[in-house]
Amino acid sequence: MTSTTPVPGRKRDASRDDALRQAALEVLAEVGYDRLTVDAVAARAGAGKATCYRRWASKAELVVDAVSHIKAKLEQPNTGSLRGDLIALTSHATARDDSFRVDVQSGLLTGLVRDAQLREVFAEQFVAPRKAVFRTIFEQAVERGEITPAPNVELLSDIVPSMVFHQLLTTGRPPTPEFVLRVIDEIVLPLAQATPEAKNQQQNQNQTRTPSS
Amino acid sequence: MTSTTPVPGRKRDASRDDALRQAALEVLAEVGYDRLTVDAVAARAGAGKATCYRRWASKAELVVDAVSHIKAKLEQPNTGSLRGDLIALTSHATARDDSFRVDVQSGLLTGLVRDAQLREVFAEQFVAPRKAVFRTIFEQAVERGEITPAPNVELLSDIVPSMVFHQLLTTGRPPTPEFVLRVIDEIVLPLAQATPEAKNQQQNQNQTRTPSS
DNA sequence: GAGTTTCGATACGCTTCAGTTCCGATACAC
DNA sequence: GTGTATCGGAACTGAAGCGTATCGAAACTC
Image 1 (cartoon, each protein chain N blue to C red):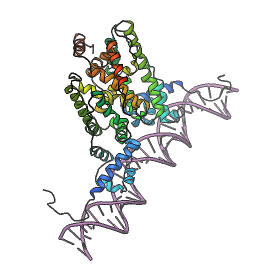
Image 2: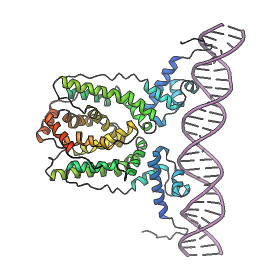
Image 3: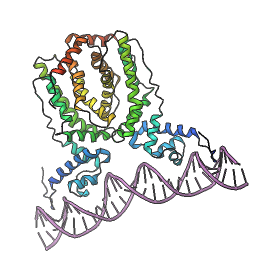
Image 4: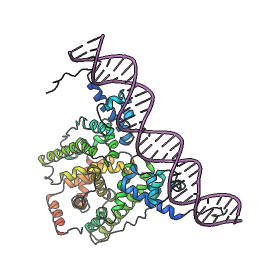
């Protein structure tokens, strides 16, 4: 199927693709989606702008492709306790080593509101893997006998990222490790460790009272 | 102090200030901070652009001033139950009547990341009043004997808005009333209604294990 | 009336930046 | 060699959009 017609001319340098994608991520992490310019990306990659537009039709496509090519490598913690796993996972966010990953997410924030394709790749690259890791963390805790199965793992796994983003938006800078720790200890863990009786009690309450609108 | 020197010339029409501020909020709610143009605001207000720049030095100052002049009127619910109050407060977010207020907040989102002054006025106009209302809601529940005093009301009051914003960012549209209801029933209420014993148990856990970083 | 300021409206200058085009040089196929 | 397609680099086009300048008309002080 491929190379049916051996086209003449100089071959495309595949290393330019990677260099441009990497440069795009770096600029994205540094100045954010809005302030990212194609010129800056090309310059960063040591490439011409034409080389960039020969591969991607627009700035949006470039960024989307760059983000979607991120090697996830979000490792699954297994410290032996639910609290340890949660801390291990979320300490990534404040750790120095993959602060780059966080900066990329912050840089994407401004673009998320209006660009549906950006939301798609954001969900695919950051939200979905995180949810999978969270799910496994809770499954491990259940197997360990630490907690009883919670039906709302999906909701619980959104708490930490939600509050981290909210903190980022309202203060302008990433939250402290202490803040993340408080969210884990005062919100996520108490909910996960709630007794089955408490869960039933809560469920009854939902059924008895129905909201107005 | 005022009018020491009766300056000659036509007086400034104070109604133009209000018209421009209102127009700014409307455009902000419709297209967001980035896509808001001063031309559009002036046109919406039926005013000239010069009239606008005679009052505010820049687009940023115009928006900041417009937002800071919003009449808060975030009413304090008092339905007789904690759950009722929480629903009453957060149903505002999805209700038709002050969806405008929500749209303004959404419109501000993109600007929050880079403009510190915008964050300031956002916190002042939206975050702070909301926190005050939340605090009172919990105080009412304590007086009612419904719950015991929670030391982390501040943290609890951030849960709903955080998850609403996160949902907005990752899906592109405001969350459904059902989602908000789930957050209230499965997260906020169980935490608020936790028994004192559970709270102590949780606190002990925090002290025994210390995070690595 | 004379002078001054604001009004809405429009035109203009200026900057930024996406996307295109051209350049000389290089790499590959035939 | 001859073709052609790529490379980095740079110049160019065109569209937004901020902020300024200018206009005739209206409003206000003296």
